[in-house]
Length: 164
Ligand code: SF4
Ligand code: SF4
Image (tube, rainbow, N blue to C red; front, side, top):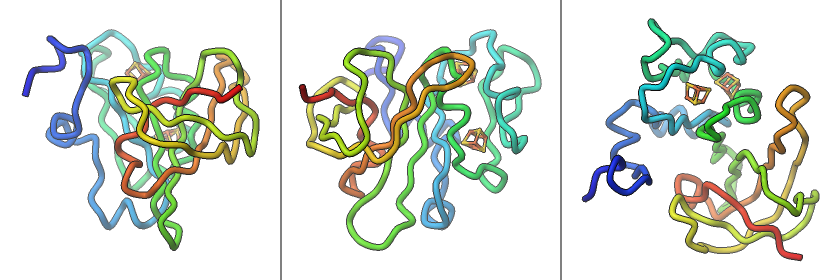
């Protein structure tokens, strides 16, 4: 498999090795943040954005460390990350539907209950979902969108395309 530094697209194995994927028990317990921040860049917005002290760095260029036991899946960090590299997944509900919360900075703006095309990390269409929540971060003005997706796609869907 080609490295993300060549392709520009990170894969799930790499994220798992980096400690960004919680175990099944934590995933089933409730919504939780998935960080896909893989470059050692000088940024610590997520550390200061998290109201639950779930994110830390020893130095500003370290990769963020997530304490999944502290993360509530609130999603505040999703709208604050300048790299659009944070998502929240939720597979805790009964049934086959899961939820992905993601940043969205393209027009048109999604509307609640609207149908959207689900895209993977490479921008490929992987299905359709419904917007269950949408709000604008009060500081960054980024849209933060929660979409329902088939449960087995929560670690696949990372963007949406609004159906006009
Ligand atoms: S989802 Fe909420 S609790 Fe979890 S890391 Fe982000 S801001 Fe912190
Ligand atoms: S705010 Fe985003 S880009 Fe900055 S360190 Fe945190 S996850 Fe990475």
